[in-house]
Length: 288
Ligand SMILES: Cc1cc2nc3c(=O)[nH]c(=O)nc-3n(C[C@H](O)[C@H](O)[C@H](O)COP(=O)(O)OP(=O)(O)OC[C@H]3O[C@@H](n4cnc5c(N)ncnc54)[C@H](O)[C@@H]3O)c2cc1C
Image (cartoon, rainbow, N blue to C red; front, side, top):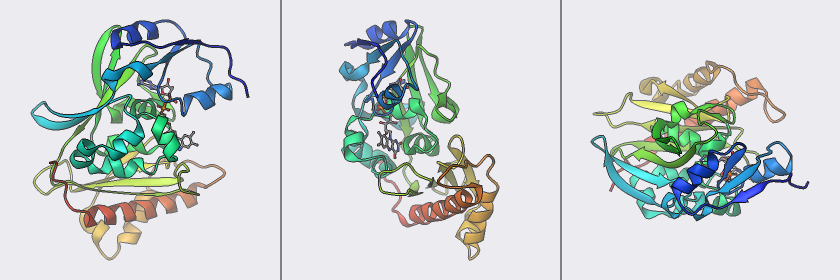
């Protein structure tokens, strides 16, 4: 299918990009892996694409201290593939490089960006769920100024976020938590396909964290959801029953041609149990 007509702008700095996005009908272009297919299908008709590809300041990873906590910051235009191989990201928050490998194929990961994945908010996408599981925040900019919002609040529904039309994501900020253990598991028809159901488990070190462990589901409901685990129940002999009950308690489970409510709950239970086992079996993060 042919694209609808659209204008194209390529700013070279963030203030210029913010000015361009303040114009009616303008929309940011990251790697184009989701937006361009939507345009070809006429499901999105931006008047102008503001290509963020020349904004070098939105690319790369760094460590810093924010509100007394060590954090990993990743620019929104950093590609999924760069995160997969980035040493700083791999050592500070190892789950990221592991989970990114589940996203599409290498060609998609070479173009697709972190900012685009968060802003697109596909319910089956791995990255928004990882951000929620890891307590990440998004940095957001517009002509009106900048702000930060936890990704858990930013993602409001399927393909929906709290971003205003003139706002763009400039980066993501992940707390570095030594001692944390993480595991991920997903069920997809073929490698690289979107997950029919997936789960990320975070087991916190005994001396910190809001709970002993939590699981974040993706591809199961309209948006990723995080649920606290009873570690004893999850790890005990009745673990299979425990995770099935957990999956059965989820509200608004998606139904489509691939999985009805009952089957998707079954997949979610399996994914959560395996993500929990993977987290318990992985070495604690050192954050170095
Ligand atoms: C065949 C195929 C398989 C795929 N499989 C998976 C998969 O398994 N898992 C998965 O998670 N994804 C998958 N994807 C999607 C892919 O990961 C996309 O790259 C990603 O969702 C969007 O990133 P992007 O940079 O390409 O964004 P774009 O397509 O450029 O933009 C997507 C949306 O985000 C907005 N946007 C882009 N950047 C910003 C920004 N910095 N600030 C604010 N808004 C912004 C755009 O305006 C648009 O609305 C797949 C895609 C394809 C084509």
